[in-house]
Length: 382
Image (cartoon, rainbow, N blue to C red; front, side, top):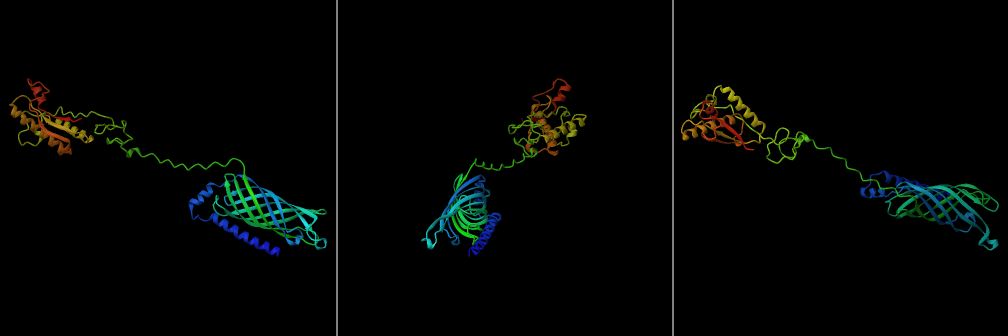
């Protein structure tokens, strides 16, 4: 019977170990719980003093129950598996027998066991954790007449609970088979049930908590796609970041005073006539030089789309004030039309405005001075 009981426990243990192993490798139903169990896993070495009792095999012809004590040394190798090397000791007394009046005799033997046991746990590290136990050992028996070693094995189960950062408690029960052929000459092999209680004490400094994963630093944004100060110059090329909104800047993003000089664009005397639209016929000779200056002005306005200008016309001093006012307006208008016909939006042009013979830049007493005063200006609004 005792061997059948051992085979039953072996089968039970193998099935339980498989279940625990399956729990380790299967996808957790609750990721947060699994993360907690893993994060509190403590792999320090521990000692485990143990006390307990045996319910002895009747074939031993000893008292049916007695205490044992022992000490284990081990560690957890995974959150769900620990291995202990252990030693324990018990002392048994023979039955006196019916002829001697029953009870215990003065004869007995000491039994020292040295072995290794593995425990396979289920559940969260911080909860009550059921486990299965399997161990192999050597059992040394010493009587008044004989002493020797025999192989032994044990199977069982229990529950464990973490009670502090460095301590657990274990309560376990099981079946130990001892192939003892020394203590009784006519018998060998005994199966004893046992119950044990252990206090597991880890030693050494606890392992430091794993640092929180550092978020990958995002790559810096592409400066060629950014314009932080809104001046239409990308941040890669902008040498003057933080320019005030509305500031006229150059290609390098720095403030720039824009001047559009139309000196050299002069008009013939008393031109353009009313209704005249061809500017080249109104310009002083050679008219091609004046057209080139106008085209440079168009190019400047296209390169600085934020620039607004006032188109203003002027005359020399010959003629009446009323006539010169009208003539200056026609000169401003014909330049205004030239700019808009070459792609400059009218919203960027103020005017056309005529100033008559006011604000001369040349001497109206000379022909060359009067020629300079027959002009149109583009006055940049900075």
